[in-house]
Image 1 (tube, rainbow over the protein chains, first blue to last red):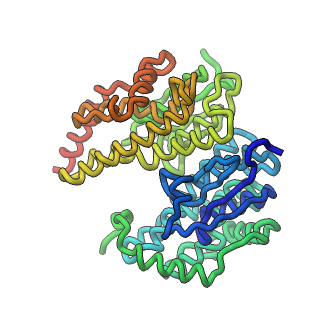
Image 2: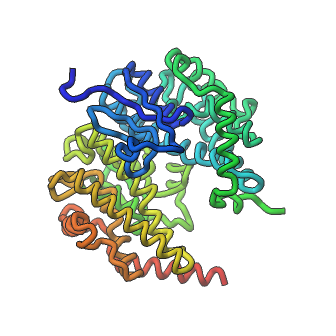
Image 3: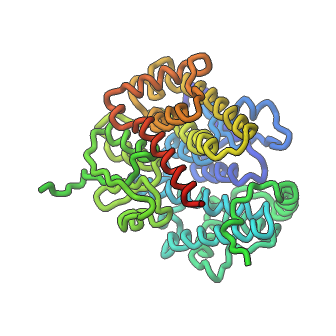
Length: 236
Length: 232
């Protein structure tokens, strides 16, 4: 037993894909934790204390110390609980894993989110960018069960949102990014990920609740996004 | 003629890019020999396009036949690979996490503000960005106090991850001070950072790697002039 308060707490929001990553990471390591739901639209003092810089979820609290940002939490978990490592041991493979996680977050997640929150030219540009990113991810996944090979790992956890949340965004925003016919390796990966014995036992927000939530977010955020993509779309 | 061994590295970069400087700082700290290849972004080399096909950006560090991209990822690779020298990242997992957190903050939130300032239209827009830059510096001051734990650098006694992650921008911070007349690092507001900046700028293992502020000003002025010329 560790000498300090060794309990693990996760402060989260029910639908956050960032929080979901931490749930999966903790579950894959078999780490018990206390989950604290925080209404991010009605924040308590807790979030201001634990994450004063960004005031966002997730925050992991371990040994009484708070840690924000899903990417950083995932690496911390891997370094602290060394069994079932999610990052490769080889330095070059680690660098490659970190590269692809960052790429997918910036180019796919970032663009798809803008697609969710926009329409017309903006959305068209965002969808185009998302598809380009997904094509690179498809290449990366060819011939593999998971991003790292045979075992589930860091990049799979980071990208897990694709397997359950991307279709919701596509439906809500009437956009098409992931076409199973065009992305066979991604399709195979989605199936491997969702069927992984640990992943499939873990909590996921319900489809109906997600649709209602993201319909509301789209309504609120539409048109508030700074134009990023309209210059990529050729105007006829 | 020198033969290539597995400890040889090549760095594709730009002298004025703080992200290239970052990697050079890490390589210097670990006493790693490498060949610096200056890229021309208007005419990217075959090597760059091959080694970073996804982003086609610098820096790229090539170790043996393996390319690594993205400055912070390269630094962690260097730290993971050359383990007999001083460690760049802290050894404690929590301290490592906080170092990563602040490096991400600098890259994602703080430095983009300095760039935004260059393109700001109108006094109100400029004033708003200037305020945000100062707010960010106050946060970085707090980070410095926490991470340094009373010592001289973010890394404590030795140059560490955050010293590199923020130190690489010192040239541009000074250049922006010269161009705007605004003193970003001010003893009355962020005394810890002022002291830290002085130490980093005079550290023998670092100072030769940091680009000179005046040269950066000249480069900026020249490119701004070229852009104006091109748009006419």
